[in-house]
Length: 140
Ligand SMILES: [Zn+2]
Image 1 (cartoon, rainbow, N blue to C red):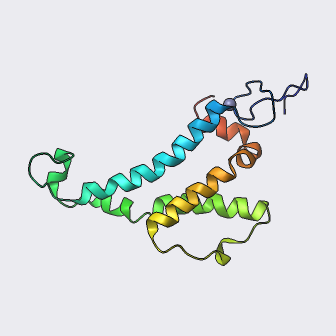
Image 2: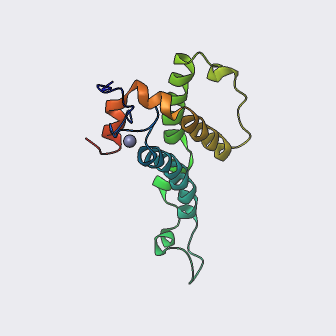
Image 3: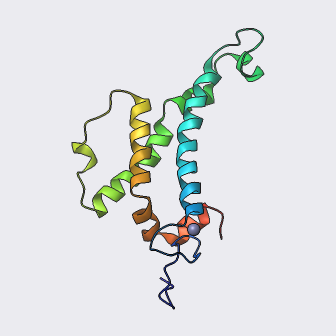
């Protein structure tokens, strides 16, 4: 904490603020990164479809099945990452352990839930690791 003059500052970029919390710029960037995870995953579905003539979204589709996209659509890399954050947050904040949370009906919902959870605990998370958060946002 660098509250020399008792002025609150953003834990990530150290900009001074009127109240304790993340500055809007950092909050927006982190939420955008989390949303991007979902969007990238969602967009990968399109990469699996064979080309359907002119007017398709991309010529990349013409190769047919894209193995990298297939693996990404499995969602395991994204979920492993998101669930590792969630497990850590739940443990540290003494919340219901992941094993007691009902599994959502679809992978899309599972990823969306994990992203919502990460957003809900954003301020707490960055306060645990302000230096890493700054690094992730490219501030340092
Ligand atoms: Zn900030």
